[in-house]
Length: 445
Image (cartoon, rainbow, N blue to C red):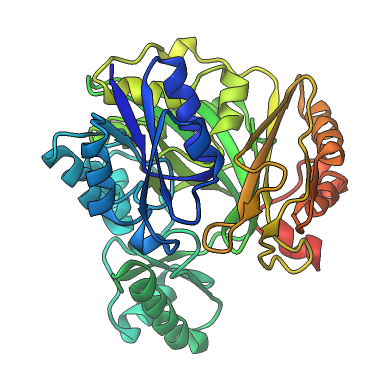
């Protein structure tokens, strides 16, 4: 096992990794920008080191500074968490060249699955269903029009290196396609340094369902069931739950097998997630694979009892999986709400000082957060300040428990999305499980 792990991240995920390391007897190093010196992950790590100024490109994305920090603190591994450098294949490669273990998949895994076109080509080769569309980049308007006409409108244009909704445009008619193609290519170039895009059939009112994967360096791959991530705003997930309300044992088995086949096709070696769209007839289609731990991993931990971060660390250290597929059973129901420092009506950032903080508690309630009373939420980073997760015997009880926990959650001095989540929990459509990725637009409308 590792002697010392440097966490190349901040906020609640850095805390989550620190806690897992401490329970494994591993020393931890926190890195921080000069405005993050009072952050909780800095206070709770065994060591901390400043890696640059507030702007992420000069600190949390500064590979040279992070590698130097690992070397001067004698760390033997780096955990990237999610965001920042978590899916940066070059960073993982540099870690290896410097004698540091990157706690995550291989650079080859990231490069292959990070390119959406290559990922589509890979999964079709092992029989995993995808939406009709291209398996090569679309370069001209004429080509795009021909493909869209063949598969039928509406279509969606996606960046091959995309994520987080950037470089994605839904097109409903030939007339709007040229502008949409240009806009998607421009966003892709600005966001990912790669203007390539592809086209696929736009699935109307789908659910976004993902399968959590565990893999090791010995060829073993299992899945931990599914999460429903359909409650989204502009392709950004806001609420996740497990199990999916429309899931059946037969569908779970087929989706799980597809996810495992995807991982095995690329010799995957870490924690990962296969993401799918599921239509109203329960047909599913591969979207992408996330080669990192997900923000929403706690809902899976709550229903399976598996510590995903711990297993990721074990895998990176060369250990075989400690679970077989038959060991995995989903027990009860879990829901996660992402609490953002945002105006709940306009979803605009609301940084500032917290002058009153009281997290909820009680049976089945879990709070993953790095904020505390008198802490200042900084404007430089992501607005998510907490994840509130609940677990109960069934979905109805989980919703009631979440409503109760949200009522208890006090964060004063800044605006948060807690009132928004309270309204969702009280929504009949959500309570009945009758929602899809377009739910929020209808709900707010």
